[in-house]
Length: 459
Image (tube, rainbow, N blue to C red; front, side, top):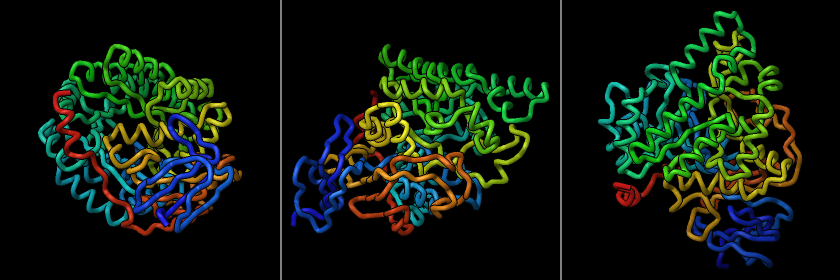
């Protein structure tokens, strides 16, 4: 038999959908994609109406934000259960900012022992060191750089002021890598926070009022203008507002590399229902917006203005998310186990082609992080990373699956018409029916090929 694995079903590609299509894998790689009678294989599954998608690449994960909490052993377990076969982890680890080659190596060694899916890493800078270590982090294999226009914490999540941001972008530009930036204007946010506190508002309304749309949009102009001035690809790592995607499109129209990522929570949750209901468990930066904005973002997906869909996954312990004073809670929510079925649900409900699922959660992230030589598509020669979703309704419950370090989720109770049935990493089954089969250490560190960086020099 020529093939190790053959799956037949509805094959979802970035540009078309193959009804009664099949995917064949050999030696951990995609070997053939076709229509009609599937070939023989050592393992062969005829899956009927099931969706066969490229394994998702989650472009934004925080595995180590809270000490002694999640770690890669849990984040990658959630990923495997959710059809996510590669995560890109953020550099803001409590106690160890990833801002040097030594820090990158420490994290690769640490994660490599725990990861159940493949992983890539972001790097960042220590504001006191400036750009000095950017080159060594590129050599160490980071897939992109991350900065913030807002200072959440001076050590773990520092603000990068405009002049330093400009210097960082200029240093990164010759490498061909992308600069991703958290888009909230520091001065504006602090002013609005003081206004909210002065008014004595502490309930669920406080967070949105403390970060109104203008705080996001001002920062986005700073980010994209810095990219335009330096020639560095500029990326906004999350945007909750339709207007932000319009701004990025205008920069692209003018010839600049300007992209925006949409987190799954901005496509699913809203302020007037979910924040009101969940309080601190729905506190995210930038904030969740009104339902009208959620629908506007789905239109941006359909229009092709969204570049990536990610989770910004972080599993804060419950005590960090249940303070009655809304602003005292930690920001961020878990989502790795449920991103793919949530996107499929939202797209199907709105008549948006599922080709966008393959594009925004696999093909584009692979391109973005310069991993498309091995990841991101059901294309011969690339890793056989595959997610299978079956048309079976389930009600999401983060505690029931046993795949999450925390029992809470803002998505608990959501009805999912499509459920992740099986996940394959490099042709091997790593999850089935919600049960994760992959052992810690199954995942590998993936990085851009050095030649890509050389080819991108001066671009």
